[in-house]
Length: 174
Image (cartoon, rainbow, N blue to C red):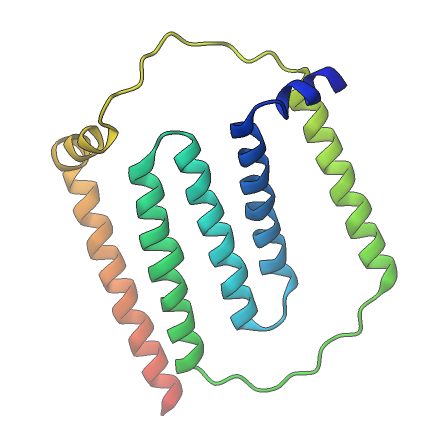
């Protein structure tokens, strides 16, 4: 098992994958651990950017660009606007319990160990599929030919959700 670990870290792309994966998981953990909403937004934005880095490693540059543009940019800004439009009262933080912290760390390490062992012991099948030279062109063809109706329905749904969020925020003001 340690031979697999040494072989894994012998490649530069695997080391970059490990760093991006750590930042993605760390951002998600910090997102649910922080109590201040602005800190949560920064943590989830770092997780989004790390996922974009993982997309680049998978040669999906278009998805990485969309991930940074839509999620790291637009969703984070939308969260910050939501924070600014709503009222937040200063609430007292609950006292931290050391036993819960220790159990959390032990559980996380145990889960990581189980997942690491499972991934190391599995033989992944290889495929002879050749990657497409221009994946952005292929995504565009699929999106605007085969999946044009779901694409338009999602855009209408997002517009209605945004208008609903504005109406709800205006009601809170009154």
